[in-house]
Structure formats: structure tokens, C-alpha cells
Image (tube, rainbow, N blue to C red):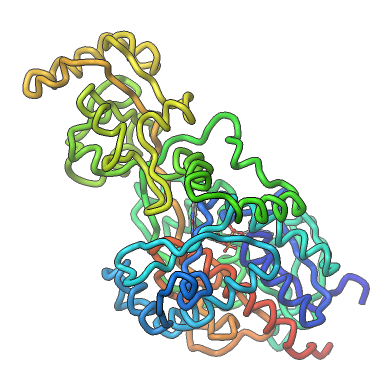
Length: 490
Ligand SMILES: Cc1cc2nc3c(=O)[nH]c(=O)nc-3n(C[C@H](O)[C@H](O)[C@H](O)COP(=O)(O)OP(=O)(O)OC[C@H]3O[C@@H](n4cnc5c(N)ncnc54)[C@H](O)[C@@H]3O)c2cc1C
């Protein structure tokens, strides 16, 4: 068979790269297919935090931890979903988390931590350095080293099955069919940007809100379901949340590292850097993707739309949902002098990755000049922010009648801020070997899923749990697929 491999991995984000490397490490001939022109997926735009229990970093810090406590604490991040959680898989994640972290370190990635994140009872968050692109660059290097065949611009459109229902390969959008002798691993990310899938499970206004990652279109979920895989918790989305628009030019930290060698060099160099320097590097990400704190509105910040109008009581309701209904889904956060002073220093930050770095108003001025505007008069601010002057001045004058501190400038605008679905939590039902299961819990032979595709009903809302799951489940899926029996040809 010419066009055949032992294992085919669908998707080149964190879970797919882990699956490809792990499968190659147990001797499989592996093909990695990525629909985009380059590897990365949501993994590459993440903050890069990785939560783990019982890690060498914790030991070095004198912290005693264990998977049972970790499992219990994960449940506290999303108590509303606890009754639907897959406790077995959650324990699996907790048990394998530090082993996966050490595996990534052995491949050349560097981390710092652990950082606290309540309700975790002990610090468990580890952050990759210099940023999440290092995951992709280092894993890419290992994929090449292991002679995994990598094809980009190769979108998988269908799974190929034999008469017994075993998955035996994939068909690309181009029509090309490729055989997987042992198994196919679905690692194609989430469906946060697929309106049709979302609309099957959540009300239309939410389904209409785009995902941050435009290429997170749920292909893996559809592929798995097309051969009978059961989908779990598809109505659970993280978002809508308010985040600023992406910078018009890529920030420095998003550009680095772009090659595996550079990633290794930077990882090595960054491990020697003092914490304040790492914090400074992390700030760039904070002002790029992190959502502005809700405390802003509690302290009196207001939102205006592109017409310069206030459109809601900022202290109530789902602001992200209301913003989604404004022209172009845009809103601007407006601060007066009092708020500007308050949010220029600790303890009042505009965005954060908890206990790692905090971004204040001057950080936005320095790092996001495209969304930060200041005006010594209200017309000046309106002009700089591109808001209709007359209407905006009227809006603030109205507010100042009951809150006189709005008479005092300078005034600031941050935005546009947009509503996004950050990620989706639904996934294919899987067992502890990452084999895809039908609704009756029977195994679909030859089909594995990892990362968002193989989320299997676990609710993992704390920082660092999705990345930990992506690499842990990817590694397990790749190893198990590579060891699956070769299918018999009829
Ligand atoms: C802004 C942001 C910040 C985040 N920060 C964190 C964090 O700090 N810590 C944390 O734990 N989690 C974080 N997350 C979540 C985390 O990044 C993801 O859950 C995780 O990376 C998913 O990994 P994955 O391998 O399943 O998917 P992805 O990394 O998205 O990879 C999927 C890949 O499959 C490809 N693909 C899709 N369809 C096909 C197809 N048909 N054929 C071939 N290829 C296909 C995609 O192009 C993509 O490259 C963040 C998410 C976002 C959006």
C-alpha cells in the first residue's frame, strides 16, 4: 500500500503534535495532517499555562501534592457542571499531568512556576517560556526528527471505514484517500467558531458570536460523529467573553519563537531569566488576548458603542452578550481620571494571568497603542477613538449629572473590545485509552481522539487544564493508536 501509514493524526496543534511524537516513539510510521498553512491551532495563541500535580517544580518549592487532591480541586472551578463531569477522565488527567510536563521538558520545553490559582489548594500552574509558540516550535522539531510525514494545507474531509465499521483511513478535501493501518487520531481542535454546530446546542445569539480562533471549526467533532462517535457536553462554551481586538501587527512575543531551534534557544535562555523579566514578556500576551476585568465596571467604568452611546447598565447582566448586539460587535471601555489613576497601579489591574503578570493602564498605553486613547477634553478623546464627537460628549455629560467625577479629565478609551467565544468544551466520548466510543459505550475500532476532540465530558475550566489535557491525551492517543492491531483487508 503506497499511500498508507500506521497512524494518521488529524490536526497539528498541541494534542496532534503530542500524538504524532508519541506514536513515532513506539515505532509507528506517522502522517500528520494540518488544514492550515502552518501548525499551531489554539495551542499557539494560548497563554501557555499547564497545570499539574506532583511536579518537580512543586517538589523544588517544597509543595506536597497528589492527583486525588488535584482532581477534587478541578471540580471546584466549574461547580455548575459537576453533575455532568467525567470524573474518571479527570483523574486520568490529574494522574498523568506531571508525567506529561516532565515529558515536555525532556523534549526541550522550559517552564516556570508553580503559581497559585485558587481554588487549587496548592500552586499548580506552570507556564511555558517564552510563550505558547514554543510548544509548537519544539514539537515541530521533534516531529521532523522522528521522520513523521507532515502535510500542511491538507484538510481531512471524511473518515474511511471498512465493512466492519473500523476506521481505516481518511479522505482529504482534495479527494485523496490515505490508509491508516493501525489508527486515526482526531486532534482537530474545538468548534468555537462553527456557528452551525453551536446553534444545535445553544440559543442563537450565543451561537452567532464568533470564536477567537477563526479556524476552530469543529471538523474533528463532525468526523467522529459521522462514524457513530457520541458527543458530550456540546452546549458548554467558555464565553461569550469580552476581549480586545487583536493587534493589527503581530506583537513581538507572538512572532517568537518561529523555528524549533529558536524555541529551544529561547527556552534555555528564558529559564535563566529572573521572574520580573518573564513577567514583562508575559505582559504582551495579557494585553493581546486576556479579557478586561469585570471589576472595571463595578468601579464605575462605562461602555459605549461605535455611535458613542451607552447601551447597558454595566454592573448587570451578560455584558458580552449585549456587546455582541452592538454595531460591528464593538464596544469601548471609557474611564475618567479617577478610574485612570486607580487602574494605573496595583491592586487594580485591567487584565491578568493570575500571579504571573498584571497589566495596568500604562501597559496598554505602551503595548497596545492601537486600542489605547487618551484625551484631555472629551471631544479630543472622541476624535482619537473614532467616536461621533457630539453624541459621545452628550453621553458623558448625561452621566456626570449623577456622577460628578465624570467632569474631570483626562479621559481614556480602551477598545474596540469584542465579544468572543473563547473555547468550546464539548468533545467525543472516549475511554482511558482515548478510543472513541459510541453512545452505548462500544468502541469504534481504529479511531482515537485527543485534546478538544477527545474531551470526553471532562469540564476543565481552571487555567492550564486544557493545555495539560491536550498534551496528556495526545500522548496517550498516539501511543495507543500506534499499538493497535493492523486491520485485516477484506
Ligand atoms: C486565547 C486563548 C488562550 C488560551 N490559554 C490557555 C492557557 O493558557 N492554558 C490552557 O490550558 N488552555 C488555554 N487555552 C485553551 C487551549 O489553548 C486549547 O484548549 C488547546 O490548545 C486545544 O488543543 P488542541 O490540540 O485540541 O487544538 P488546537 O491547538 O486548536 O489544534 C487543532 C489543529 O487541528 C487543525 N485542524 C482542524 N480541522 C482540521 C482538519 N479537518 N484537517 C486537518 N487539520 C485540522 C487546526 O487547524 C489546528 O491546527 C486558550 C485558548 C485560547 C483561545
